[in-house]
Length: 50
Image (cartoon, rainbow, N blue to C red; front, side):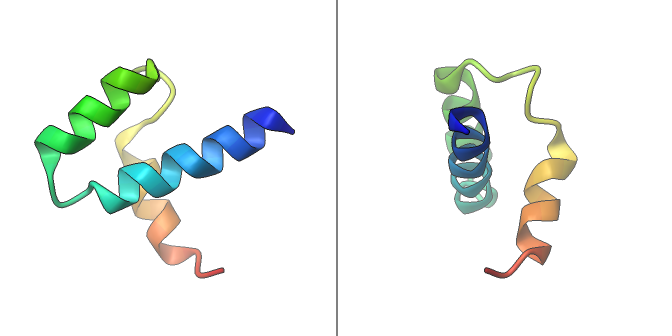
């Protein structure tokens, strides 16, 4: 679904930005998902290798 795809894209973006807290904060804010992306999600993504 579109929601699942959006979630995957968001998780990837947050993972890429993990080392840059300012960029991560900007991404999260820009996407309007402050309440949707808990901190642990980016860690979970790293353990999933496609």
